[in-house]
Image 1 (tube, rainbow, N blue to C red):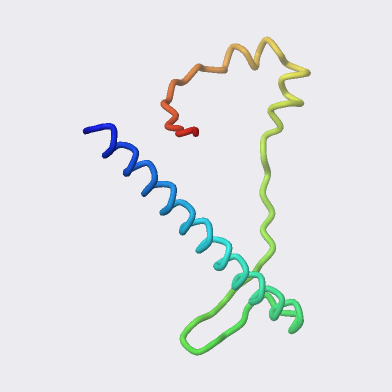
Image 2: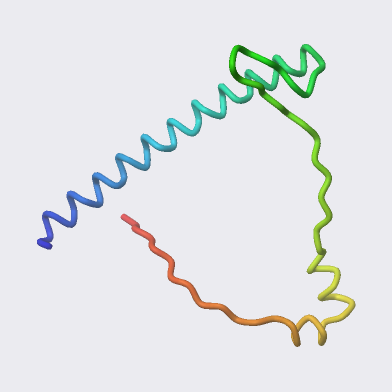
Length: 92
């Protein structure tokens, strides 16, 4: 791949990522307006035509690794494993 082709691909990628971000922002705004309507109606479930929108509370239990590490540092180290991955970035 030539230098010009590579630059063109990076620029195209930047344009598509900008479009994606705009679409995500628009989707989030629409999602927020539906949530506002549900709050106004004081409901967790809203039927609209063939769709049912649900906005429910969910409880979850998560392991507090920071607190565990403070109290049981050696045990934390014993069960920690290193992993490797690759990160793709482009900077100007």
